Image (tube, rainbow, N blue to C red; front, side, top):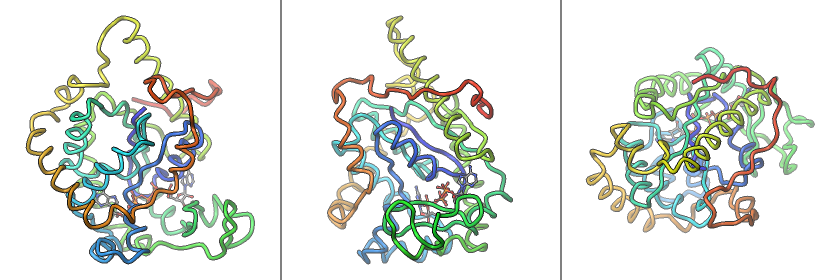
Amino acid sequence: MRIILFGPPGAGKGTQAKRLVELYGIPQLSTGDMLREQIKLQTPLGLQVDAVMKSGGLVSDDIVVAMINERTSREDCHKGFILDGFPRTIPQGRALNAMLEARGEAIDVVVGIDCPDDVIRERTVNRRSCSSCGAIYHLTSMRPTVDDTCDRCGHVGLTHRDDDQLDAVNKRLGKFHNETAPLRTLYGQILQTVDGTQSPDEVTAAIQVVLESVRRQQRLKGLAGLASPYAGEGYGAGHGLAAAGGSIKASVAAAGASWADDSASTVTDDDDDSADGDSADDDDEEIIELPKRSPALLKGVGA
Ligand code: AP5
């Protein structure tokens, strides 16, 4: 299943994506993590984007589109993936559609995680993360067991991101409302929203309900011999994404080439192992075994 996690900075996309990786065995593709890795490695790309990211601005569409084009074409994305932080602008959404359409693929569902701005400010200012394994903590709601030490990998010295200073957070919120939120209109019928102010477990359960419902609809459509509304040309046409496909395909290809030239060999993704480790029938489109859930956890799911 190809999933987009959609929401403002600090809504919990990264927290939830890591849980979904564990549950479903498909990789998390976080453009923020990929870019931070480039900065850490001091590559030409990292040096280019460092200041923009610190200030809370957006990296140019060409760069992130090329990254995602290259990353989604890798073997471990064959069964699906979880996009976290991409797309973030209308041109990125159109480019994503074009690159998937060129491969006969489509996004199955966009899961929106709703969270008001004041909650976002509190979460980001108090967020800490592990620079070694990427685990995410919060100074009050998700503290590590031992202060300043990662529960998952034992790394000592949790990091407070530069762009989690209040000024940068406010700028990121502005970017979200002005440039990212309009993507909602592009995703129309495949956007399902959950309440991100619930506990992390409740948010995970709500997302599972959404994914289960999408899978059920796809199975029913398959049984009836109908094309899925979530796949193929119907999706692109239905969302006004197909029109610009030709020119975007060209720009995706061009951007992909420059990305590969500059830094493809240095891009890393911590989730590759878990995805590769899942050896279920690779060629079968019915790939996700949905874990059991409690009906009580339906709370917070809305269209
Ligand atoms: P990116 O890394 O993608 O940042 P973001 O989208 O702003 O999202 P965050 O990582 O800040 O938050 P999150 O939603 O993952 O929340 P988290 O789970 O950590 O991007 C960073 C920068 O890179 C951008 O500003 C831009 O410059 C650049 N960039 C990236 N992608 C780009 C693109 N496509 N185009 C252009 N530029 C791009 O949770 C936050 C905190 O809340 C944590 O402390 C967590 O413990 C806590 N928390 C989570 N869930 C809950 C809960 N349910 N209850 C209580 N606390 C919770």
